[in-house]
Length: 119
Image 1: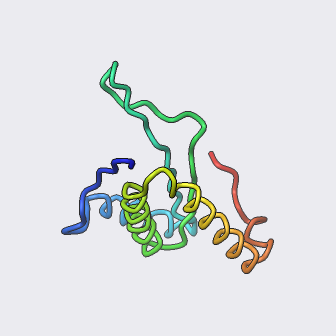
Image 2: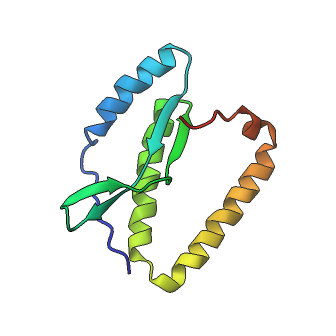
Image 3: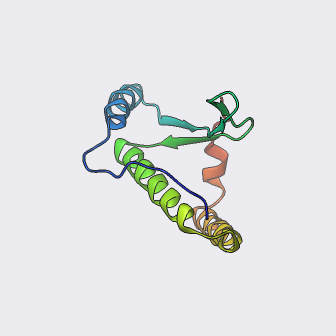
């Protein structure tokens, strides 16, 4: 079982302040709120985190509510991931792949054409 550490949300985390400021600035320019997610891996020898090379996701959000939903969704996903045993990982991956395929098919190809390349 993977161990996932997170801070339960008792009050809005300070990250929402950054989301509100950066999001408002992007939206004022007519841009999406661009969020980059890149995991870091802890190096016990050097006692520091290092970026996990070539593992990066860029998410373009249309509004502040999507930003909060992204944070909450990631928190929920990681909480569930930490409770799974290794035999359940493949089933989880298959479930998300099927769900993503169904959502993409329902939205049609025009959404994929609008995607901007990652920076």
